Image (tube, rainbow, N blue to C red):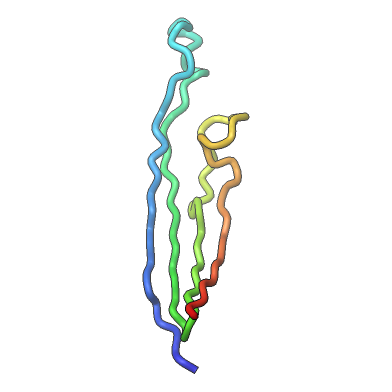
Length: 91
């Protein structure tokens, strides 16, 4: 059996910028509508074994919660840390 060798590793950082939902509120009430920025880190490592490439990864490595609870999907990572694996076969 051929030995596994690391093929690639990949580290990604996502900068989720700050936002302000409504600029019509007064200075006293605006702070509750402001959302600060934060970072997410993802890491993937892949290995070659004979005719296969195996991938192992973690998204949101630090398990960072969004700065503000949201109801709209797609903007903030509501899931938290999650792991994934993949396998590709070469024929």
